View 1 (cartoon, protein in one colour):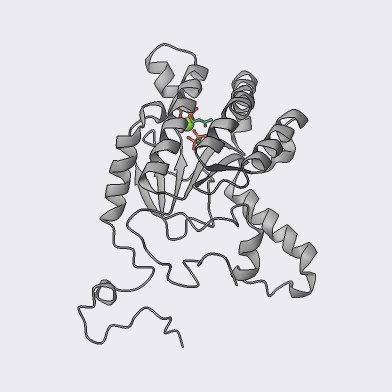
View 2 (view 1 turned 135 degrees about the vertical axis):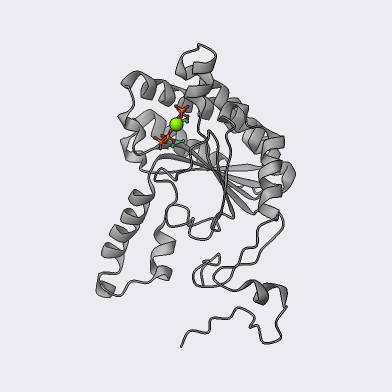
Length: 262
Ligand code: IPE
Ligand code: IPE
Ligand code: MG
């Protein structure tokens, strides 16, 4: 039995507060540029926003928060910026773990970690272990993550563990191999910074996620902005392929959403 319902195989339970929020934290560089500061100043300020949004998610009752921190394509940036981002990641891991535990936050880092230097990999492992028992909020940091990488690494796992099923793998076989196999699919996706694209984030898991785009740059995103995204989410009708009548019970003959395929 899968831990969580897949939106394509079953209709998931819908709660007023999104259980899982996934965010592309974008706009740090533009925030800095507007202030005639180096881009890294935007990333430093962005870490403060992460703290505020983690707190806000706990207050709102969100159970899973997944943040896109570094994409598999971000290696294309100038070496200096990549280096500063890695330093920031290291210092956050060194300084924040105790605070995470005080707040009941379990930390996970998802992505191809093999490309990070050994020290960073050790820090990630230590932080995950130290926070493993915390149960209030699961904070996943996507680092050297790409949605295409995720699907491919899952398929490569299947090729090794279930070679006899090659040609017949199902969604149910693949899902436990995905990097976020410990979390339900995101209910709400937020991208700050005005761009309206996925940029190779959670390609598989966003199949039925509600999208919220905001012009607000990540360093200026705050608890009120998160609340506004949740309020917008609460106005959506999540149909998962069904008709509106089926949800509201307007039509006597409307089915309850059980799959009627022949
Ligand atoms: C997001 O902000 C942070 C990372 C991708 C690491 P950006 O650095 O992409 O900021 P903009 O998009 O250039 O403003
Ligand atoms: C996406 O932002 C990745 C992260 C926020 C970590 P980018 O700024 O790298 O995305 P593009 O290049 O504008 O699509
Ligand atoms: Mg950007």
